[in-house]
Length: 310
Length: 269
Image 1 (cartoon, rainbow over the protein chains, first blue to last red):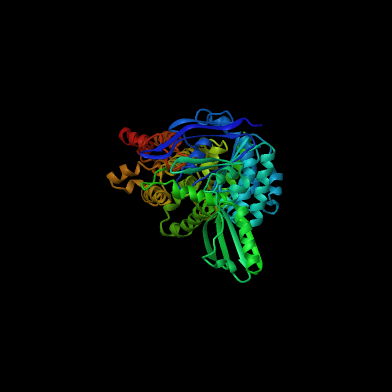
Image 2 (cartoon, chains in turn green, brown):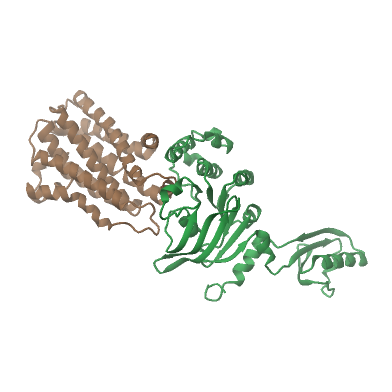
């Protein structure tokens, strides 16, 4: 269950004089959801395209389910499924026709049940251009998983989707993972990456800046916990009052916000202060740094003045 | 084989379902044929002698030059070919299936024109049906190949229109469809021989309609088939899945090699 399904070693991709990916290595285990994060132009798409066999690496090696996409692209087709960012379907094709066409080329029986399951039952005869964005995404996902791929690539799978469709897609992705499918999730949505991924890799300026579980990555940051407090008489707003372990404080929208290195001592001191000043606590929230906070921290601190990684 | 049939069936339906393709495959050629029959036959009764092959040639030009390249370019630009590649759809299917479905639409339109022209306009029917069908196949084959080639080398839709019109408009004017080829000045006549429509019109006149060919009619048939083979081969060779960051196997100017049989024909006479 823990064997590596994707192995990337010293991978480098150059387009002319432009280095798109500069010597990165990582492994993805079977049944894992692996998030690929990074700002625009960091190299996510290039990595995905080389893993999908659409491009060849300039240097290093890439293996997907034991297959070298460069040397054996035909074998690769039946072990990967790809939901592209743009749906990549003719505007006049219907979900039924798409399912028949792709299934025929994969040599499998069409999985019309997937269309029904993904809420496309009423739209099976509708032309692609007439489907909503959410329906187009769901169709792309149905086609990507119809042949039961070992590895599924999702490129911005929920961009532009409403909340209900997004939840539905997330449920399906989790189900696929539970059945042993390895999933590579490229996304700009940090909340989605944090919620869905077992591990994430953050790409910055064509290099791997960080890789680990969302928890590990957030834990390696400055470690400041955000404590937001709202009291009836705003008794905490006096700037002369100090609190243990607080590195920074701000007042915003009737909330005193403290950034603390020690939650226990700071919260305890705040509660004592409220009682001492005979104020009333209305709301208190403690939030650990999110993956997005950590991502912003990494992207803002690790780029040098020349745009390179520190 | 199931995959091929599925793909063919989808592409054929698209040719009717897609408004642009419906226009190029059926409405434009049939509308033009009816207009020419009612208007041109009144102005120039001699036009009736060559009306049937001329309108079939027009239908082939419209369906291929105006119908094949643009969807290919759009599919490449919209990432549809990338999706096809990922799902194991071969490039030969991507190219050959639209050409075959266009030919099938053309058979339907050509049957309509050929069957109704004698009834509606008193236009003469072919005297040699076998040759008529053979020349139609040669022209449809050559024009499908050339149109695929345009779709493969054109970088975007605007250039596609330009490349297509380079063949379409001169074909209408110089191929002998509107007025006899023999009326062209010598230089214009030589230039016209570079056009598949001229070769087809010449072959129809000499081999199928009982008229007189202006130059070797069987040479025209051979040149059409040869040009078609070269064009299909070049289209497959020059095909690229993706316009971004993908090196093409050969220079787009190689596409001009499809003219070679016609150039040889001019020199051989």
